[in-house]
Length: 78
Image 1 (cartoon, one colour):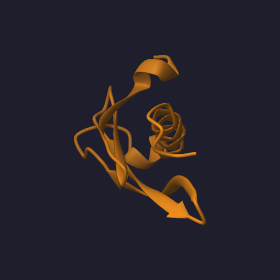
Image 2 (cartoon, rainbow, N blue to C red):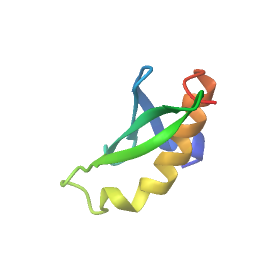
Image 3 (tube, one colour):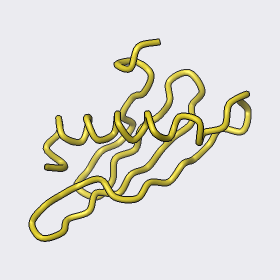
Image 4 (cartoon, rainbow, N blue to C red):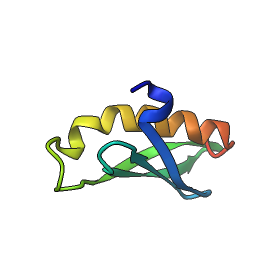
């Protein structure tokens, strides 16, 4: 599965972006932080799907990269 379809954005607003792993339905919420006039992706929370073979943490790094890219496309972060 290529990176373009591995994750999808479920919700995005000025405070949070929520992404979902398409194959295993793990969800990842990342908070958008504004500091000194700069907006960036802050801490994240993993909402794992316990019915899968893989732990949600296994995809956390890829989820963050996808969320950063999606947030930039939506002008939510700098």
